[in-house]
Image 1 (cartoon, each protein chain N blue to C red):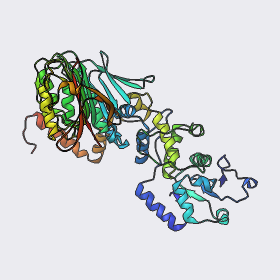
Image 2: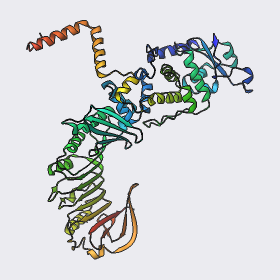
Image 3: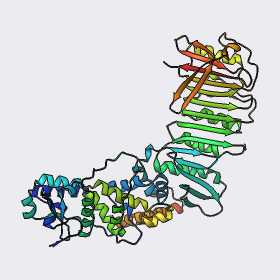
Image 4: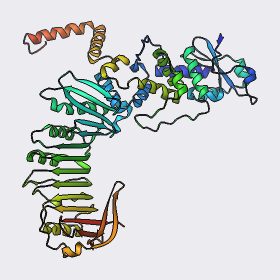
Length: 201
Length: 348
């Protein structure tokens, strides 16, 4: 089991403040371990509720196995916890219902999200799964920014959106795969219509 | 699967994951500069849609019918559309602008960053004048929000586009318009149809030119109306009983005003707070409610009547009167030409 010592958390024991802040241990689905401060965990509603329910003591944290987060890989989880540590203690934003949503991407977040779109996709999934509201806001804003000044054709390419024709073709293919006889019946029906028949039967 | 911990919590998470179908391992392999938007979980997708501005959202809706059916999840139903037919412009939430421009080339979209404006260059065809209506229909289909403002000004009688767009709006939404403004030369039957069919809740501005001897039968339900005509146009003021604020420039005589004021005094205009009236005719010699013109036009204390946060009018004299129900008001007239008459109804 490898321990991820990235900027997420300073694992140097001497650096741990005198008041003995609790650092929880989490493990990604590729067995990478992270230590995250109690305050940083509060940014994630899911993890915060989880650790509250578990009621771990400092000894439990050290002695019991790391909490496994099996849906998220180490690379993504590292970004998530880096973000949580940087924003620890900040208030969780409340949606005021305004559309379009006003979201500013801070410099730190912009740098953190300067990643390929595959990893950004995973980061958004992770933020959603762990219910980290502000991380979800900034990452969704980053995706929204990809649409700036683009035409429908360009948006189709950027967001990998099928056109109506492609949707129709996919639908037909799915129908045919489900019931090959349906296509035959349809063709027979069309043929009879061409021949002038009023009734199919 | 999921966050593992104590046995009961683990079981609870497993159940939640099964319910929410959180097995999100994706087969999508990232290609530079692409992002599989519709593979995001629904609530996250909605967050992205909420972060797009209205024009971006509209352009996105043009990608396919499937996408068009989703964009309203962003909460667009509470948005408002304003249509300016003459400029071929649709404003979304009074901020984001979309212009339709005719071109000989294939329909295309262009975004101008400096003016924060989208231009839809539509291919010129026989029906190209209805392109605005087509784009409006697409906007309403995508956003499912109402048109709240309609504006048109033109000086050529042949333009039918405005009527077609107005017809589309009146037939495709239940909500009345908040504001309606037309200015120019109109065919009598078109104008009649428009005024009799359009429903406006707040504000109507109508400026008519070159429409002599036109009598119109319409009953506005709006709060504020401004009606100006340079010609001999007659309106039945008795049908304006819903209005709170009226500014009229028509051919009315002092006798017409006297009849109107008698009706007001009897309580026939319960909503009215202000009426300003000017006439192209100068035969104002009769009395109004038994007051001489010289009395009504005398100067006096300046008072301001506030209609709403954006609108107020100033009274500078005149005579104070009282309706049968005790409502106090002031009538004021000009001392010389041009003739004008104002009625200020005072709240407590």
